Length: 94
Ligand SMILES: [Cu+2]
Image (cartoon, rainbow, N blue to C red; front, side):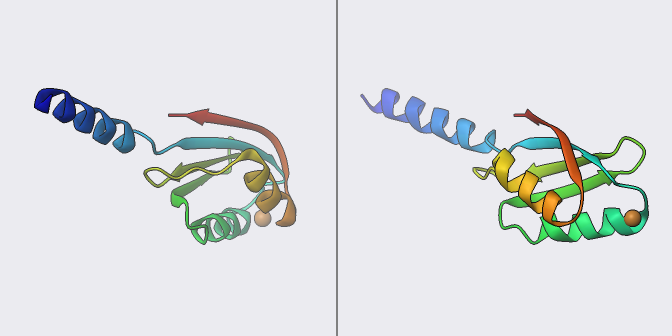
């Protein structure tokens, strides 16, 4: 019984640690470093966001969420649309 509890606790700990997400959003309208800075500021202000990186060449916004946190597609799309950009694709990696 004790062993089972320990295994369960370990399993939960492992799952939690792995639960941060990497989200890659393809965005139209990203042209200069001001765009990149603005988007980084917007996403860093979100409580679920650990790190955000903007690649101007690939027109890609990479968002890393904090452990146990996520951001749904609608939230990401709204943040980018409100900032004046068009989201063409959102991909997720665990
Ligand atoms: Cu710009």
